[in-house]
Image 1 (cartoon, rainbow, N blue to C red):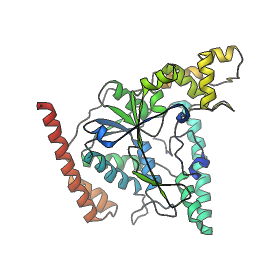
Image 2: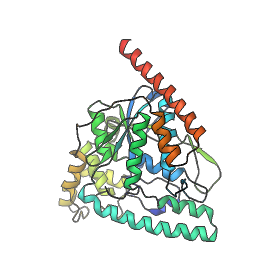
Image 3: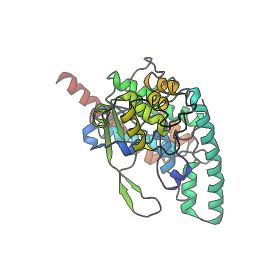
Image 4: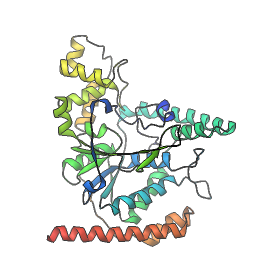
Length: 363
């Protein structure tokens, strides 16, 4: 498995502004529906695991950007997020299923390399900011320096398994697998900060599911309410008057994880071009803009016919308290009392969820 930073077509400047610039930038074209956690009660949600872990590692850290660590210097921010935020979701009656990335498409390798370079630059700037005592800058650069390596992934899966929470290993892109599970009706929606989930065909996408209800405004002391958003693919396509295939073409013009966007083309201009000329082929043929050597057909295939698997089970299990304590307390120095309280909450939420399932089945 590759050593991953966040899966994003954004850059370090976005992180410096305290933003999550993730996936294709479709925000300007889409109006989400604001929902509450109650709207998701008893619903299975396929969560983009790396996207969530990145959020946990970005947010759960010291004021100077230093992540939570155990006595051995191992980063533990992701454990804190996975454990406590997942418990919160289950207490709301939500049934999370985490979906992990597999091997990235070959076209993504160049993007991965660029992110690695950005991460190294950010790490250097983080250390410089720490040295001069600039705590605000240090935290921003620290977020851009986040690395999710294979050990983080393996131990995250181990913790989820101990919690009794199911996860699915995708053969390639996790968002594609989650979208496939939605289309099969095995889960109700996928959850990610990325709009790419819509390109992969997720019928319903929930954003901000794993974020705090309030988060700090970049460069300020105030907190901002974070709305839970629902995006429905069919409604979006209907409102824009386009097909999913045309939405993918819009994304290619803007830029994806698999290609650089066309210079000077933002979401609204890309939409207007596809709306007027229908496809990238026609735009290229009429020489409206220069498409260059973008591998359009390959990118379309990744989004419209991605590599997914049917080899998964969504099985909920009772939590294993001893295993949870072994991972969090014995290995990574978490507070015994806090973890035990978390386990109590998890067990109570699990029993309520199980009872709700039985009542639904026999009701």
